[in-house]
Image 1: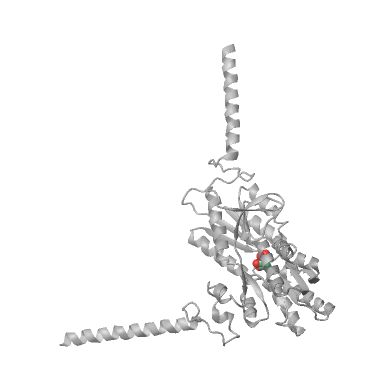
Image 2: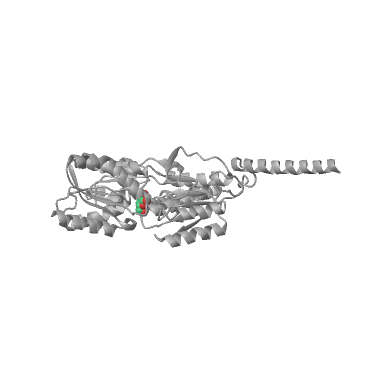
Length: 405
Ligand code: GAL
């Protein structure tokens, strides 16, 4: 009897030890039940060939670039056989949170989030993780949490490009600084990059910052107001406007034009929006920062699949979000002005030459199929069809003629 009790106790102890070992293993391995890499219990990985369902939560489609992001994310997903549900929050934090909850309830495998408010969106990451769903922070960094991945461009470097371009061309004078949305981490990184370059010149007394503001939700009308105020304050004595994106650049340029200063003040931007490229061609905006969107969208979707299938990510960079070092994939931006507009944005097919130079008919656009307006394409295909029809009739007549002989 005593021996039986000893055996029973030994059996219980062995079972407990086995359970403990299984627990430890589960934190480091991708077991069938899903790993806990990243500090949360992941959904079990998808089996090879099983389709992946992605939720894409966007802040806005207000700026042209975001429409491109949406189209390219959806196109890439289709290409790789995944499905995407895209929801747009129109700059409303509560709406974005609710939309993400709805996507999680629907059972998405991965959530890609372009946050309106980087701080508040931390709660979206928590909600997703509590359901075992990984989160990719898209273009803008989510803070207060541990997103699984951050895909973006080198944002601080873009700020440096704007600051350097301005300082190289306007080494002395009065500067207006217009930042983006205070809720957007990118706006902060851009300003940091700009000041890396501008602060030493300011300390030397070479440049004076007459206005230093951030435009709520990147609104062009706010940029217009800040620039108009600066014009009034300085009696029109402004040499450079460092606007953080093309939308705010557009607002600033409207204020400059209203004061008769259009084309006389250096204005920076970012996004290579069509309207900004047209202004660069016309000489009212001086530069923009071109960030190709396709590599960004592709990296988000391809990484979403890797996360869903439990494969390792290929994320060479790391960005600290205040909570942790987030594995990151950062694309390289390009500074664009009048001199390289054709060799960058147009050469890449990001915008059509005819569209960029539509108000400058004297500009010679290369006669490539890419750059011909679509009507020309239509005319060409009509011509080809007519030619084919004539050929067809000719063969028919020849055959009939041959038979008669
Ligand atoms: C930023 C982004 C820019 C611009 C801006 C306004 O986060 O980096 O490309 O679009 O938002 O939406």
